[in-house]
Image (cartoon, rainbow, N blue to C red; front, top):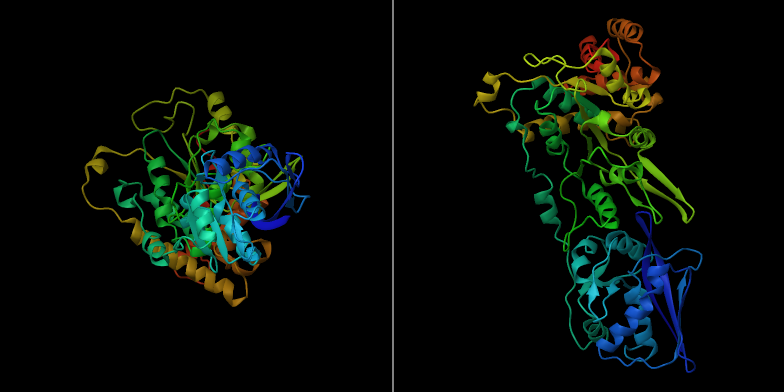
Length: 514
């Protein structure tokens, strides 16, 4: 007898439908799984046998063959367990075969006791199921809220095999898990860390506001303890709130990586990832035998913060170059090729020298000139060229620390940032462009939207010659100047906007490090 049910699998951060066919013959006692399964899928037959027996279903010694289609795509992980078990129950008559299984998808890992355990990647697989025309999804209860965000899909969270069989046979009622959009809208604008807690550092705060308004990458340079990390951690709070579509994109990546907690629904705030400087290139970019997202993809739609930038290995930092430009990273392995989205704002921090006290008003620098040169040379020119803004974060005097006056809050800064982004978006929309921030502009858009008057052009010309700018550095200054103009509500880039943009390229000037 042949039975067919449906499940889903992952390819990168996207899902695809998998058809599970079960055929049982009245001979031998073999149990085979075919269709390009990996070792974890092959091990499912032992989990299925034990789960059936411990759930009260007899497991006769018959030949059982399960095929997973399409057979040319590798199947990985334990999320297929539930679908394979259901196909056996239908085949043996424990579940009514009058059910229309063409509209149902099953996802879940089995324990030996028959309990259904949570899985990774429930959201992208639920999206794949909906695209394949499925209207009902059964999966572990812990994953139900995550999958409930998919429109047109009735999501049922189940805890064990017996419960699932009773629901399918209509011996038990089970209410679907519903997604509350209002909860997402209420939580997306909240932020636990506020810029009002940052003392002084007006220049750095201004630079960060410009960076966020235009989606620009930023590098903060200053002695230890000046607030670089404190400022970086508060950047997500001044970025525009996540849209629903962005939240789904980011949640898919975190779901595949196993970063979501049980019973989580969506990410409400923009991601903030801060890997240690010992991180490997693979951990940063993603990969492995079965490629999974790395830190730069987990930061998608949010912030990737690299503290102590020169301490990161050259191999790791060079991995960033292509994703910064392309907003995605492609990982190629023998088993296949997957592409992960990686549209993030890069925020870096570093000391001005190895000892950290070059230029400090009270603590002398103990580094030699050669030490300073070697320290700065750890950051490659091509990577530095891709960082739009370099700003110095100076040490604070005692008076600023003791000043009890309330600084500007994150919500106030976020309003200006959002207004500037809307200003830019409307400009792009008039020409039919789907750009969301100035950092996304390419050469054609820079030519169209970053035209200068004679005074501004002369100022940039002098800076280009004296600072030894590259063509990319020239384009970065124009993009930043465009953002400064947007913050001021100006359609035209004025010489003052160009001057401020040039000042925000510290490491392109004859910096005192050398």
